[in-house]
Image (cartoon, rainbow, N blue to C red; front, side, top):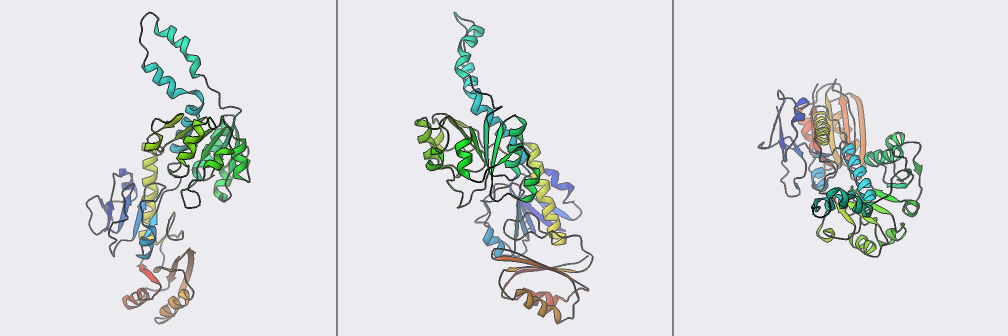
Length: 389
């Protein structure tokens, strides 16, 4: 029986995968084998020796100490793309809000009172101030063509927009999903200069922090709209406010309110609603539950954020799974230990990611406890697991 701890409210759909006959899932779980988490900060959470993996039911992993987990032999997962449709729909709402002055119109209607003039007449007289352009025929620039960016770009095409997509690191998987009508931009500047609407969909890293800064905004059309439903920190708030005040940018729409933006001119805020749908939550939990299940039972790693991915099938023979440093001579030291018991290596996989590596060895018969323990004493080793069919 494996013990799984939940650190936030987690959709019960995990029960379809982490079945009760082999998994005990509870927020009160002690000494867990795995943790399912959403937004809880784990940077100060004690990592116990038996913890095998941590799965974040969402895309961002700023709340996880990735290196500390990796060096403790703990694989960290996330659920990229599980909330893509939910975010795409909110971006579509953002495009409409940026165009048609819907939010301002709603607030104006709240203040209507009937006196000498009827409500109907006030509406007819006042509606002109909320006129705005249609999306069809305008140019949408999508920066980042991952799971969400691709869906946003394709939606733009469906709306009759001219779509420019920029992503120098687009994956083959996402490229196949991208509409052929999306024009490929080779530079960020081209997207900024040509677009009527610019929407950002890249991860927040040191290299992308303040990606949209004063210099970037200066390249945009003064009548352009900027949307950020990806991550706080990708857009420099001071630069945005200055551009809006100077009428060098028409509107900024974001899902990340902060003190500096409250009440700011031509800023539309939503309260971090991107993945706030029951469907999105269920999708995320299903994905991470499957990842936890497959890692615990087969050693398979899919959508890890601190170790290399290594998708494996079910067990047919004993499997030794080793998490270790990515340094020379590790494989030699592993095979040397295995040779002590004349173990036949039926299959071996070694994959790496930065300073971390994962080696999986399927062997002809079960090794002794002594041999498994000896593998664990190698200087380069973080964790050794023996998985039996």
